[in-house]
Length: 270
Image 1 (tube, rainbow, N blue to C red):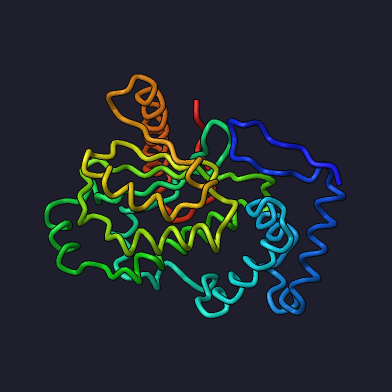
Image 2: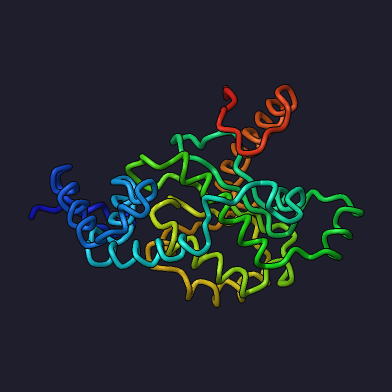
């Protein structure tokens, strides 16, 4: 079987050289899954199997194992049934993470997380601190967003999500270790092959110690996708100014059209 090796600037990955060979591997995984495709036909589509194969370097054995674990999790967690109304304290949760109405310059969807809960008024921050949404509800909201991203990128032939996490004002108490570990587990194990790049902006010095621990739980390919951006770096400033400009476009667009959660309509950018 012939394979093509991607350039060293990207995570090392063996790619079947033809669509026929890819389809043959998809069919092989489908057979190894037994009755599962019949039980979950909507989830176990060719696109999903291809995504898991791509994330597992086209190993049918690893992709099958990962898919079996994921279907077991989905059977019990039922992520497809999560609705906005069922998320505790959804208004404040939406200030911690959201999917913007714009794409990046390569046409990829963007997922923004704000661990330090910036933008809350003092009364809102006090209320949030008092209620302290449980880790269970935080994870539920993460899965809700991942399901939305998955729905709009189902047929993508490569990783297509840009994950931006702004750590300005971050403190250890902002992101409990156990929550971070569980979040990474969900993203890497149950939603592999979605994240194209993870951009961490303005992490404070104290974050370095936290990062040394967290990176141990990153798979090699995910670790290679992480990029740090600092506001005092000229190249970083160019990137962040571009993102801020798109945020302004998003702001004016939503003001004219009304706020809508998980809206798939994108504003026009100059």
